[in-house]
Image (cartoon, helix red, strand yellow):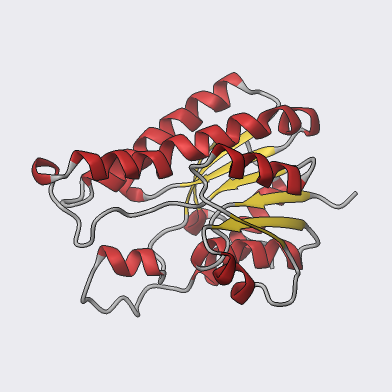
Length: 224
């Protein structure tokens, strides 16, 4: 039976790289993004199922699950950084912070809740993309970092409550993505690796299925 996965935020960056790697490993993959145009440009060969919409929208989340059918893996990858350059906590606009939490915390939690019945039945897994900003006190990262800390702890508790589902908090490291460039406006981030570099470690992780926990992809050893 072909395993199936949902990857949110799959039109570019890390989401696109992970989806590509899973397709190459024989998975059926469903991805979403807000723009149908971006999805069509990213996946012109139709190798994945695409569903356009805003992950904050309950109707979109339902459509995503309907398009996927029974799934073995949910990858909560979609997210936003917030303002660029990032403001200090003392100056962070609270209405903007609410939006950061809506996208980075509440939306992936809602999608996870929706997918859990199938994931329980299939012994599946939830992989939520996080960041070292969730556990380190970097200046300027109070909004994004605290949102990632919140979804990390929700995932940590979920792992304790769902013994039949693997729940991983995955830190991919600093990568050369548009979001990372937004975090460092005007700076050259060419020294960061492209997302495809960490994709083999991700595929090995989901296929070898270690226990629930926090995983740095840089620490995953991929067999030769």
